[in-house]
Length: 283
Image (cartoon, rainbow, N blue to C red; front, side, top):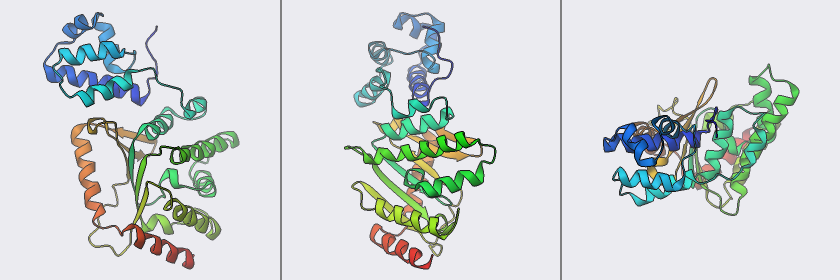
């Protein structure tokens, strides 16, 4: 089978974890290749996510590297298994790979934490809000591209409709709730949509009001996606040209710390509902 030309974030992550295991064990790539029963070029493809590694081969390598963390190895083995097609696969020709990767990460995450300062979190956006947002920001989209992007964003919300939805916590700054991406009608619809989401099981929404003291986290919007084990967590941040995924240990620690910090500035869930109701009455 030829090497993958465009591996997914999940495939790249598995390869990166394999490489980390090898490097921490101080094993040379040529020796790892011999243990795996492949040549060094194939081993390089495994570690870049450009070739599939079997669960059996992965477990053999992990054992050779002396990894005793069974939960971690089991999580890697699950990633190595044949991945079922997800709803996002039908959008491969219509959406950039980073968008597909984000949908897959959301689908597989047991829990998610979203911090947004200027936008309502993606999976809490109503259609009229999304339509106004993309129509304003992306002027070079064709009508077909715009509709496909809106439809894709709407489909991302279905992760919360599953029988086993992820635990989802959102901290949203008041600025995002008051920002009018369209008119007052759309603003009210979006606020009601957020309020309705607070009634879902496993969903917690908290607001940081303008007068919260202290708060200087304006540049820390993020989506923190839990993996099956903490080592496989991922942080997604928005970039001018799309999503960026971070998973280095020091990066994960940094964003975990930032989350704990902003939590101290946020209202509780009940206070948040009252607060959003007040914004609705003023809009």
